[in-house]
Image 1 (tube, rainbow, N blue to C red):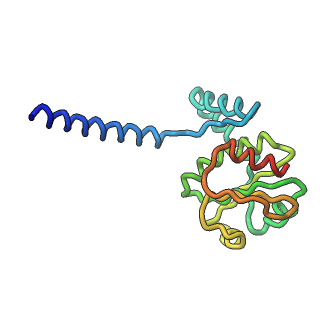
Image 2 (image 1 turned 90 degrees about the horizontal axis):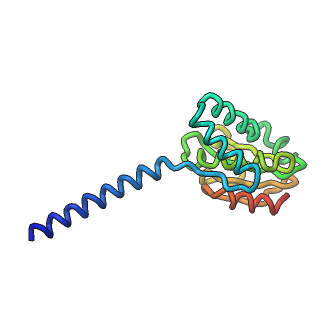
Length: 171
């Protein structure tokens, strides 16, 4: 009987230990680019550079941020509604974890479709009127505009392949 009790205790201990290990693994998870061609290669080399030389990697990340520009209420009409090419806008906030997961995915999309798609991000904490106008209740929310009209809405964090498939329909 004592052997059975100790086996159960070990099972519970190892089970809770596995849970802790799995939780720690999940928290350290970083999404990987699965976009075809140069985007996937650029993402993998960027990850390798990050381990080798942090300064060079942060400079590469800053370059990617130049492809996804901030948009605000005063510039909304000109940049988003007045654009000749389709526009992807991410509604986000600095405190939102899933939003931060979407930033590299959207930067990869912006790089892959450089001349055919414009990508922007709108901080919902600073631009509440635009978020209210489009009924944004959850972030991250991604809207696709074409010819000034809202064509598609994606709520929540999605994979890069899902987002790329959605963008392809409007190019």
